[in-house]
Image (cartoon, rainbow, N blue to C red; front, side, top):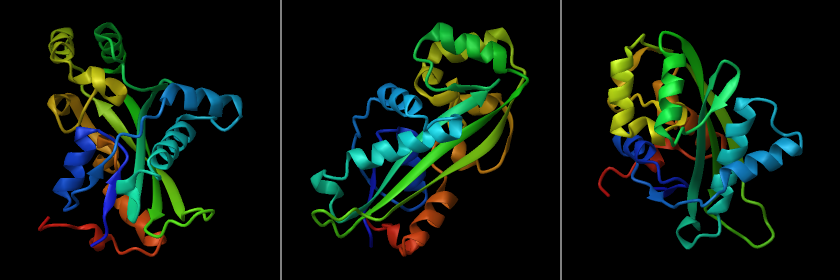
Amino acid sequence: MTTLVLASTSPARLALLRSGGIDPITIAPGVDEDLVADQATLAGLIANTADMVHILAKAKAEAVIEHPEARGAIIIGCDSSLEFDGEALGKPHEPEVARERWLAMRGRSGTLYSGHWVIDNRDPRPGVEAPAVGRVSSSVVNFANISEREIDAYVATGEPLKVAGAFTIDGLGGAFLRSIEGDAHTVIGLSLPTLRELVLSLGIEYTDLWNLNR
């Protein structure tokens, strides 16, 4: 069995991995996402939403590489954002922002991007960079044309304030999505098919991450 470290405190990502037979160690990366994104933009590294989630996922994975529990493990960092009307939408945080977004999104579509960065930290050695690989997955989200009353009720729950794009697929917000075009796991924030392909590219069997009896 190979230990997986999730550089995230997202309950949705943790639940997804566990439902897929992986019980990871979770470590908060402590990354200032706004600062990292601003610096990368100034450096000309971010041209679109996909670039942004890719860079933030990498920053999160690298932030925990020296953590004692990450030594000898596989690390995955993730980041997600909804691209809507050409704008990258992260967590709204404020009810007014979430309500405004839903008024704009209802009956329309956006693209949810999730960045993944995997580091093979099984054999950490001083001065030697650990093998790593990343990829961005995307899915089109078609929103239902919900009423203002439904929007107000949903915002009042607090759920959309804490998630990218102001919605979930695996929570209360799932009823307000008409359909998903692509991998639904991407919308949760971590694509299991993408994770499998990334670890295989590093020479690791995906099934070795399963810890069904842990």
